[in-house]
Image (cartoon, rainbow, N blue to C red; front, side, top):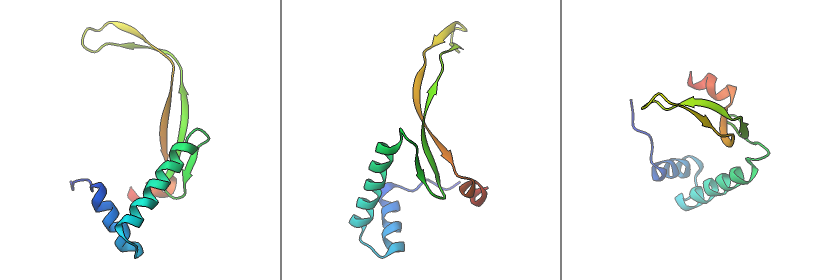
Amino acid sequence: MAKAMTKSQIMAQLAEANGVTKKAAAEFVESLVGMAYKGAEDGFTIPGLGKLVLVNRKARMGRNPATGETIQIPAKRVLKFRIAKAAKDSVL
């Protein structure tokens, strides 16, 4: 299995593929990430890749694996990424 690409490798590849500088590619990615953070509460979609959604989890009972003791896990809000069908089909 190949190693994951680093941030600088991703920026270099984006810059080369689109004929822009590495700095411009980095600025574009940073602005996309900023938009995703701001829009996550309403659901932020990147067409062909997936969607960021905010989900409310209910409180539930859990188990401490070290002691076996049951514990109450409180309700909380979590951020999930739902992968797009097109991305699943192309990878799998």
